[in-house]
Image 1 (tube, helix red, strand yellow):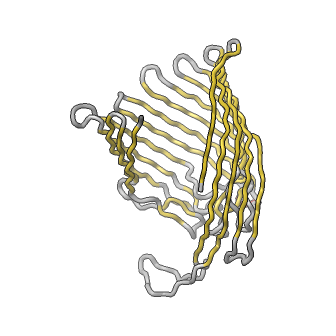
Image 2 (cartoon, helix red, strand yellow):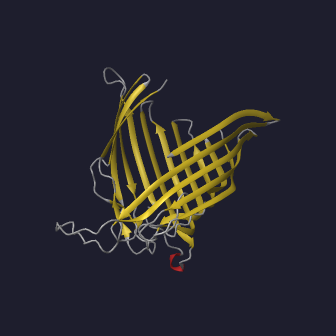
Image 3 (cartoon, helix red, strand yellow):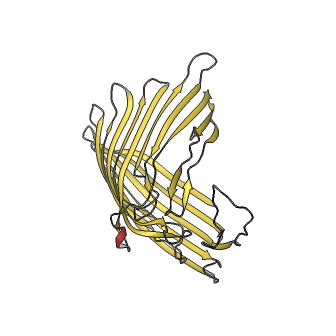
Length: 360
């Protein structure tokens, strides 16, 4: 069960030559999951050869490796002030304080025949400061620094509640909104440090652990151009280097955590027809490239990169419309990620998603 609420109020005022846009709010989140997860005991189930299967072998009875009722309640108060002055200067200041109440009731499992309960109350401040300047030619360079605090729902293999994830990000970049074409281009460089990051365990396929510290540094590029009112082109690239910077295991220092690709590229086009009976019909196509990722934290095996194609068909008239999205158009079979070389997952095959929408 999940419940989310976000109430906010915004107002504008001036203090001398400074224009303010003030935003304040309060948000609340409630999340509860009562679940039991079971599997055969690792190492006791007869192996299955996918290319030469032998049927009829007895299966090991299932046992529960996870039996718990998790609850997270979180309350946040936040405020932001955006200041404009000096014919182009823009300063953004915001801050928030979060309270989190976490609890876990652990029932009997294969690992422990006894029940236990854990609870914790956490809270901390986070904020962001940004500075930008808007030139008349559409170029806006900016810089920002932000901290974050995020309570995490879940427990480790011993049933202990996770510590909140926290960290800091530094970012510089430039936005360009040209005057001769309807478009927006952005370039950013970032340095993100995360602590207490929840990761899948390499030694226990049914558990998660918290990494001491991960650092991500990289670049993001994005471009959006409306060539005409009905023809749109978008493209994006994200490339970064992510490493363990602190770890209880010294062999992991400088290594990249598994599952995460360090290169992602995408491009798409969308065209809406205008005219007679076909007015409002739209056709879009896109391509996505997911770079290779590591299969283990020791970085000894890699998951290959993959390129996928998507297609979109739509129709819109007045205040209603319908869209058909087809992902992995050519139904390519590929491995999406591995959690060690013993546990890998295939990527989603061709899928169709139909969506209807209306406005009033």
